[in-house]
Length: 89
Image (cartoon, rainbow, N blue to C red; front, top):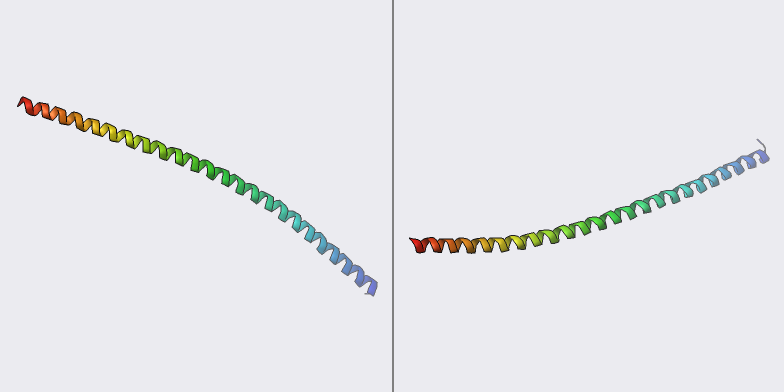
């Protein structure tokens, strides 16, 4: 193998490596864009979930207050009925 043949083989190797590097960087950029898109979608879904959770929590709190009012009213009516029953006896 002559020096020119060796030089040509080395040149082809360097060109191949350069092409592989460029292709690797291109693929990395595509993968990074996909990852960023996926993270954005996850963040959006998380925000919606947090919003739904907050709404559910507010609803449960309102229902709890409503149940307490009904329970107090029920206790008041029972007490009134018991007092009325005791008065009749």
